[in-house]
Image (cartoon, rainbow, N blue to C red; front, side):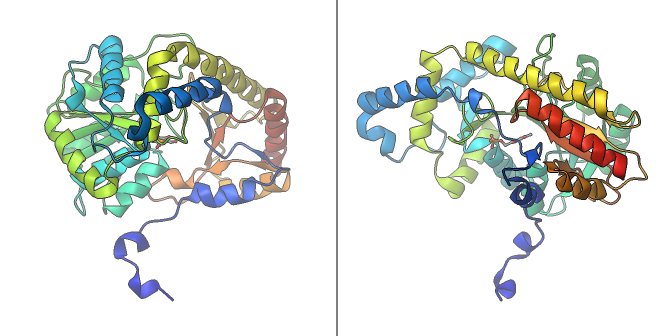
Amino acid sequence: MFEKFFSQRIKNTPSSFIREILKVTQKPEIISFAGGLPNPISFPQEELKVSMNRIATKYGDKIYQYSTTMGLDSLREYIVERYKKIWNMNIDIDNVIITTGSQQALDLIGKVFVNEGDKVMVEKPSYLGLLQTFCMYRADFIQTKLNDDGLDIEELKKVLKEQKPKVAYLIPNFQNPTGLTYTKENRKLVFEAIKDEDMILIQDDPYGELRFEEGERIPYIGLNESEKNIYLGSFSKIVTPGMRLGYIIANKEIIKMLETAKQASDLHSNIFGQYLISDYLYNNDLDKHIEKIKKLYKTQAGAMISAMEEYFPKNIKFTHPKGGMFSWVTIPEDKAVLDLFDKAIAKKVAFVPGHPFYVNPKKVNTLRLNYTNADCDTIKEGIKRLAQALDEI
Ligand SMILES: Cc1ncc(COP(=O)(O)O)c(C=O)c1O
């Protein structure tokens, strides 16, 4: 009835496949590996309660008032200090803008950089939230293959040479959907390949803090070496997603444009949430809190990997994430993942079929599993059921 009123932009944008799937998978009898929700242990509820009282007393009406587009200074200062400490970044608060989650950061970046038909390089597979957002801006996507150690360098070089993308969007740490992390070596090769290109590089990093296997943090691609790098961070997976707070770190000229885009979008991110998270961060030890989350996710990931090793047929491949929230499963090429999905739902276990992570999904034989939201026994039972479904396709 309203078809003729809707914009071309929205008509061309697929609605989130995962949200559709979640409708099926949310029935209580279903073991769901489909969502991407952080475990509630990642919400420091008691500490946030204390912070709520403190900010109400300390700041009064300010926590309810309109505020600045760039975000709360104290929160931006915290981010600056953390990135200086960890990454030796030469930044100040004018390099940082607070966003309504990283999802808004992606939307603002789309607004600022993507004209209709602009070439945007993403990983294959990539984060569906980015694909959906940039689809609104009519980006022309190019997907570059992701291997176990990071981007496929040969394919990357070919894409750069032949397609000349304007923007590249990468998730180097514990990627969504695959759980894969670029090695240090791969990051060097990627930077070698792109450093002389006329291209903006976005590194989206909501999971980087969640490395639960041994090993050091691996520096970003071209860290401190390129003004064309844009870094995205988020409090969703390490404090709370409900506050919807993330941030962008970039060159000041870029930040100015993002600020203008954000003014037009929502004036500013929720200021109550910003005061709350800021107070929490200054009065607690974030790293200690992150340790708790990592310990839990390590156990849950371990339970899923060992159950897959025990129960899955040997021709099924899956990633062994060293952090983050997901494992990515590849079934034989002649099988269709949607057939598996139907069999799995009949056995009351759910996952996300690989489709929404590809630009042009055709024959899809991959799927995403999330392990952060079930206890180890439930994970084992769910994987057993999935193995039975695999036997039936
Ligand atoms: C790669 C990636 N980027 C961005 C987001 C959005 O996160 P936020 O909650 O900060 O908006 C997610 C959420 O799952 C994600 O996986």
